[in-house]
Amino acid sequence: MEATDVIRLRVDPKTKSEFTEKCAERGTTVSQALRELINRELADGASPAERFQAIMESARLKVESSGIEEPTIDEINEYIAAVRQERRSDLKKAS
Image (cartoon, rainbow, N blue to C red; front, side):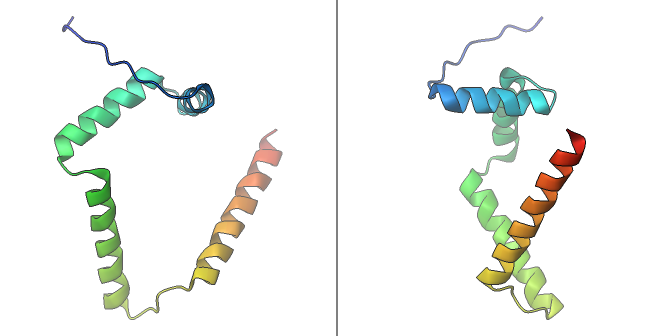
């Protein structure tokens, strides 16, 4: 087995608990999730802010080339509310 090293990270207990739960829902562990994040960062070379900017630029170009008007903040908020409502409904059906 390849030699490994340990990274210690301090977070508040609530954040740790929520992240651990989220990882379990995805069928992974906290260690696996953090290793994937580190490997992605090393492979990509771009910071999260740089990736976000690239995504936003790509979206802007797609909107401009499609001729579709950019959604208003109210339309975005309505969409988010609808998706959240749908997810709540799905969770109620599943339980």
